[in-house]
Amino acid sequence: MIRVRFAPSPTGFLHIGGVRTALFNFLYARQQGGQFLLRIEDTDRQRSTPEFEQEILDSLRWLGLDWDGELVHQSRRLDRYREIAQELVSKGLAYQSEGAIKFKIPKTEIKVYDIVRGEVTYDSEEFEDLVIMKSDGFPVFHLAVIVDDHDMEITHVIRGEDHLTNTPRHILLQQALGWKPPKYAHLPLIFGSDGTPLSKRHGAVAVSEYRRQGFLPQALLNYLALLGWNPGTQQEIFSLQELVKQFSLKRVIKSNAQFNPEKLFWLNGQHLRMLPGEVFEKQITEFWHDKMEIQPEEQWRKLIALYRPRIQTFEELQEQSVYCFSDPAYTDEKMLQEIRSNSGLITLLKQWGKAVQELPDFEDTTALDQKTRQIAETAGLKPKDIIHPLRFVLTGRIASPGLFELMSLIGKEICLKRLHLFLGQ
Image 1 (cartoon, helix red, strand yellow):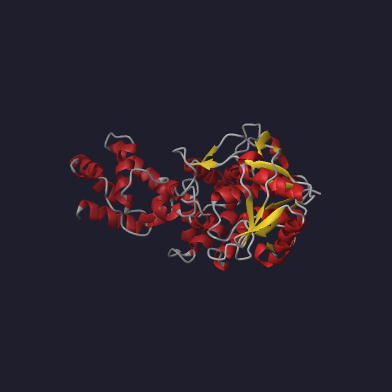
Image 2 (cartoon, rainbow, N blue to C red):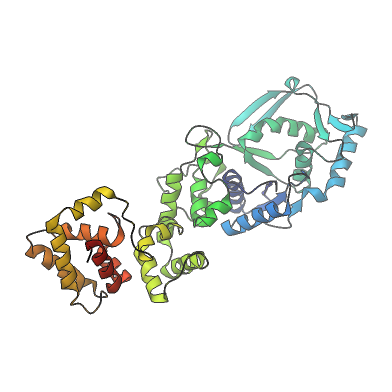
């Protein structure tokens, strides 16, 4: 049976690169009918914390990357690592050095067959003897990882390309212990738009930050799957189930992937609009429940339905609809002066204000539309000649959802109040 693992260190938040590694392991395991195991590499006593571990587990659960079997902690396996280190010493393959234990690197040529990169050859003459146990009795990464992979019966190690140069050392250790190495697949690294490895300067890198911003887990996974993997078709929108069905390590790209925030936002918007109506309503309401004053239920439903086609994340709702909750801020000085200096337009706006007073309320958007068009036509103008200025007066912006639907949402009283304030009445 195929068995793969994701092995994060709880020394920081789960980041985008880590999630991509976890995702590719998950997809391969599920596609092959195998197992996806989780190991916490927590032997760094100074930097590892329970809080970071919990954040990693919560993020994986939120993403839907559920692991199989028991969670493995390296910190609970110290005796096993010491046992293996002593076995190598007793065989003359390792030795004590200033309280540490070093593995003797045999002088040989090492061929690494990598599923992504093909065959890579190394000359161990270039390697120094390898510390495998520190003087404090704790293992280094190289020993702990090969012991864990052996004991967990890992068949395929899928990890970042930055580990490729570690692999020949791991193979030498495995051979010294008489163990069959797993198969390896090293994934391309993720770079920012400036060609340097992805970091905080390129924007959010922690999964928890994307969750806080109102991204959907399925959209984040969809985007990360396309960073380093080519489906071989023009399809860009994938559910997790579709990714499982189509994923193949043979289609992982060798070249480094470039993180594009705009593409992620676009993909999230696509997934957001694909949600069934009741699911969208439930999720966006839960997201904003403790962050924004939720309107009466019916008005809230109108608000989220109106902005659903325009937002790309749940967080964008507040910024996009801020004028629904407070008076507009007229920051576009040019537009403000254009309207206020046009006496004909000011007269037209006053006429509109009087005409719509006749309406009992603004619930009937068709009646609002008709009234507005009549006023424009009477003045020998096109409807847009009054609709655009009206939008600016009511929202402070030159773009918004449909004006009449928006006026219905804001309500007659507030709309007319804003108009009168703008006109100085």
